[in-house]
Structures are given as C-alpha cells and as structure tokens.
Image (cartoon, rainbow, N blue to C red; front, side):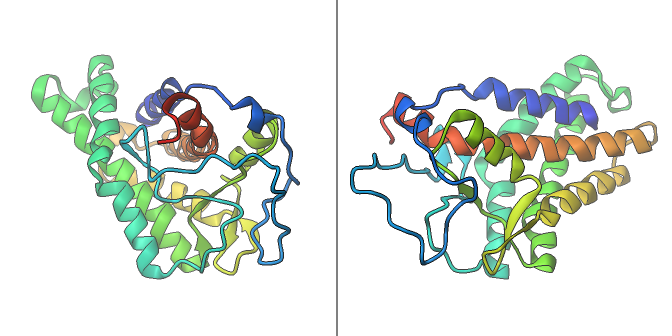
Length: 244
C-alpha cells in the first residue's frame, strides 16, 4: 500500500514544473486568505491574478480550486458528492492507477498479485479503489459530517515560500461551511479512514499497523502536494500556455 502512494507522490512532482511568474512571486499579501464581503478591493494598478482552470494540462481535474477573493455560498451535500464523484470517475482518474499499477508490477511490490496481465489487473484495481475511497472519505463523507468546505482557496500572490507554506498548510487548515478557518478534519480523518479501509482488500501481509499508518501519512502528504500544485498552476499555465 505504501509503495502505491510513494509512486503517486513521485509522479506528482515529476509532472510539476517549479516555475512562478516573477510578477506574482514578488507581490505580497497578508498571511491569511481574505474572502469576506468586507475585503478591500485590489488596487487598479495591480496585475490581474492568473486564473484557475477546470483542468490542469487539459486533463487533470481542478474543479475545487478557487481564488481566496471569490465569494461563494456554502457547499451543499449534493455539491460535495458531485465533486468527489468528478475526481473519482472522471476519465482522467484512469491515469494514476494505470501508471502506478505498471510501476508496482515491475517492482513486484505485492507478490501475491502475480505477474503478467492478471497481475497488472490486480495492481490496477487496488490502486483505483485506493484513489476512489480516499476521494469520497476526504471530499464527501467527513466534510458532510463536519460541515467543512472541500474547495482549495488559492492564495495567488506573495513570494514562493509564502505561497508554498500556505498551500501545504491547507492539509491541516480548511474552512467551515460558514467560512471560518478550522482544523482540516476532513483531510486528516478522511485519509486515515481510507487507509484503514484498504486493509479489507489487501493481502494479509500488507495489513500491518506500520503499513496503515504509513499509508495514512502519505495520503495526507500527497494531498498537500496537490494543493501546492494547484496554488502554482495558474502561474505555470500563464507562463507556458498563455493562460488558456
């Protein structure tokens, strides 16, 4: 189980060019995101922020990323279910299991799965279920119970390290449906629940406390890395793809 997550984590950062638009990197904002109706408008001389797109590189879902300046109503239960489903059943959701399963097969990370086409199929569906389970726990089940917002609010301005710190901190800090910052129970508890549930369908040799805890930590780490990617994606998109 841990190897699946390690490979996914590596794939994330292989795909991410570490580029920030100089104009954006040199600007600054207060540490906390501002999204209240009383926020002061940006100066007319400020350079417009690069905008998020619904997909990254035209493939990877980016439906939950919005700017901290956007004024959005609370998510409904239906909306949380839809975003979890989009992330899980979108055609792009086939990409990570396909790559990770091939890597795990080559490494024989779980010998019980066998080799060849049959072994590949075993690896593939396990990774796909891991991915889907975590999406629904983190983006639907726990957020509905805790009344937490599942969207990623992009800071968008400030230096590279400031924005990196903000993005990574979102694994531990999120917003309630009322718009207040709170501990990200959805992420931490949801990722742990997914890691625990995986013991039900992995071989007995994988069902150890160490593996489960490692999977839990890596699930959170991967999501933190994903937030980092989302934070800088508009800058990467503008620099290399003209903001399309």
